[in-house]
Image (cartoon, rainbow, N blue to C red):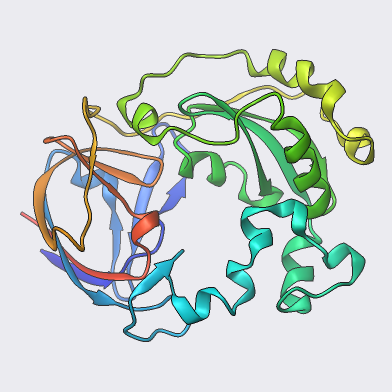
Length: 264
């Protein structure tokens, strides 16, 4: 059976373990059902997630011109402290920026390779944690806009990491942490503007991933260098497919690539 379509990040369903779905225009694949099966991935071409043209993907699934023009790829996406919609100030598209920035956001701690701080829209909990491959997470504050979440994250980065080591995460070399204690320790470092939004009574969320075998020395598959790959799927964690030969394929970093996926 062969499926073909444009890669976008896998949809997820919170269960034990997490259920993963690869969604193409005309196909819908439950990836959990492919565990222990041999699959092939063939690079077919590009399709920008914004303009839909066959142009090389630059970043985040967008071609270069779209990446530097559309609001979905503006700097405040990666650096929420740069948000300005709460001041009624436009960056690229004020209507879009108000829709996204002026809604409840969460600053959280997640443990994937180590404890890290992050920001997401409240509507993306726990999806954001699943996508990062976190096996445990907890909210610290819930604020009414993206700017307040951003300045809180910046303040807490002085005391806790804000990056994940993807190799450590995929090898599952992780240590359980008491995130309630971490949350309480960091409370004093929350900026005054966000202090009233501190969450004092929540507990950790625990996440189980569908993995039969973790890679010992993960090596990342590049469809540009290796346009045809075949392997036995052994697990899914974060947005990565994990194969028996220690090859790992990051769906998220290959958004906008057209692929043919064959199940043998």
